[in-house]
Length: 130
Image (cartoon, rainbow, N blue to C red):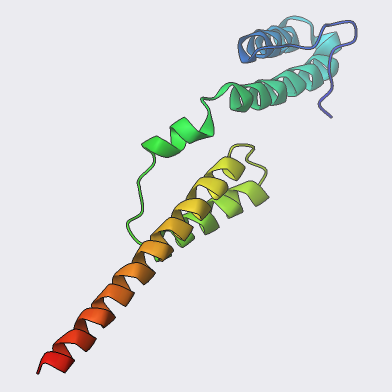
């Protein structure tokens, strides 16, 4: 099982975690007697690397701005579902996307309702004029 090396301070950056992981990976080759321990330490620091890397990623709002913008509420809903699935798989950034697309879906839905109401009103007026 993956575990931290005793007496080693926990890495605070992904760079640090990666250098720890590579260090212990190297020991698997060079110190066969400690290979099992080194392997579990290496695994642990690779997991730490992934966790820290995700935490260091740019703010999800910025990332969401780079993501495609849905033009209908239905499209936005499918984005929400997609990111909810990622969230369920343990993606730490997915939650912000879920929020982003959920509020976007709400805005689009309101716009669509206004547009539909305006079109209906226009049709009523045209019918009265005829």
